[in-house]
Amino acid sequence: MPAYSDFRQATPYWIALATPDMEASMAFYSHIFGWRFDETLSDQNGIDVYAFAKIEAGNPAAVSQQSDKYVESGVRPNWDVWVMVDDIIDVVLRVDDLGGAVIQSITKIGEYGISAVVSDPTGGIVNFWEAIRSGPTVLREHGAMQWCELMSTNPESAATFYRSLLDVTTNAMQMPDGSYNYIINTQDGPVFSISALDGLSDELIARAGGTIWVTYFNVEDVDAAIDRAVKHGAELPDPPWDVPGIGRMAWLYDPQGALLGLITPDA
Image (cartoon, rainbow, N blue to C red; front, side, top):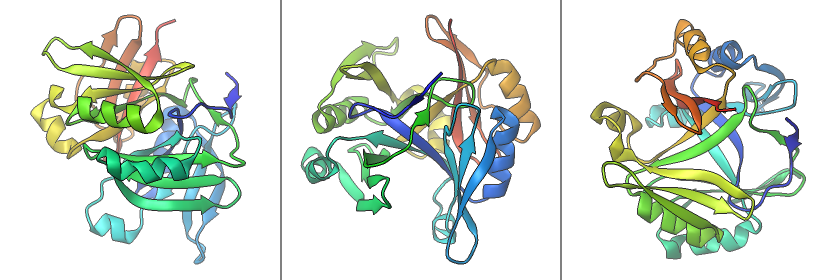
């Protein structure tokens, strides 16, 4: 699968794990996905704070060290999602009017791009990214992002926010319990989904702590990946499941407590 560099607005572009133990997380994901870490960035004290994962096709993700401040304040380890936008100033200026909040204002990241961190009206945290010279990212192959899903306390409100903010369309699908899930579409097709958090078990809802993004990683064999993950300290909260026309899927909590999804897509 080729690396991608040209995305329409609203497309998830990059993912990075925020973890309190960067070395342990790097070792875990190397076991699960076969990642290598050839390039690591350090802070001014020489401490490793950001590492680029690498597979044969390129860089699918990164692992970052949570600061002591975030760990002490109870911020949970998590997979952060970066969503591409065409004009980040325009997007950020409209967030408040649409019921969201700007968590971190516009920041230029070297010569690569411009970022901002936003909370949607249901509490979901998303990183917006306007590329300047961003390198390509790898998608839809073993060890890389296949799909992103926002598990929201109010899917309709979240869908309205992203539809208006990012100028996309949404398809609503009624679920057996009467709730609705939403597929977010650009002109290129579906790019991410929004689902109801209250469709989960009480235990998973409590553990999520509110609206949360779930990144699904492509794996060649979900069951084999689960076996490797559990062997190296992951927790499987529920058995894997099959979605006709989509693939076999599972959720895991990594050893540090970050939630991730696995999927082996149907042929």
